[in-house]
Length: 52
Ligand SMILES: [Zn+2]
Image (cartoon, rainbow, N blue to C red; front, side, top):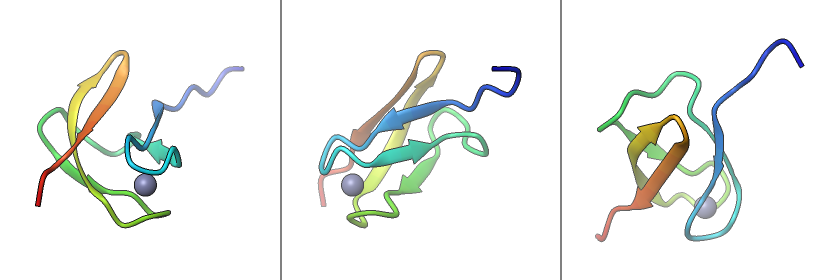
């Protein structure tokens, strides 16, 4: 595969999180469950759920 996208799983629902346009420290929203996630790392891609 030539095009590798940084993908990880939502810690809340297991849905796919695309970090292609994210940076470390950014907040991304899970498109599946709406959870707010903080980007911990891009290599490997990792996120944590932000406690509301
Ligand atoms: Zn989710």
